[in-house]
Length: 106
Image 1: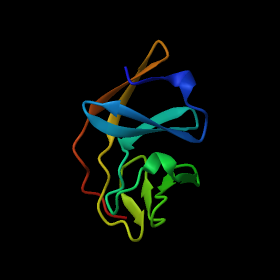
Image 2: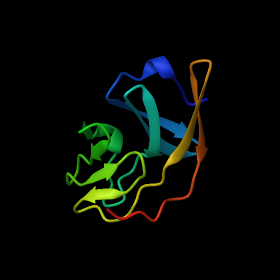
Image 3: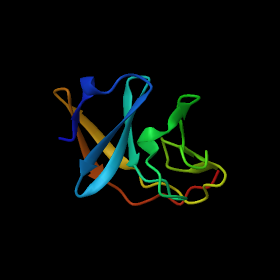
Image 4: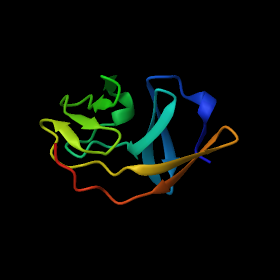
């Protein structure tokens, strides 16, 4: 378990640690999404960024954006996909399983 479902507000982010990695959790429309927390363009925590238009996270450093559903970069200067993680919710607890990055381009 990495967090409680009730511990994340709607349209908010939460930084958690999983298998020695920093992960960013997002709650959008009641659904939890998870990506690596570090931007692939610069040394910035996406959990400090802004969720936009529901499923896009803006990096707080250079304002590049990613689709949190796929990890795809959708706004420059970001060009490398984020690694996404599978999310399972059981009895109000959030569990993760790491996945490989997707080769997704906008």
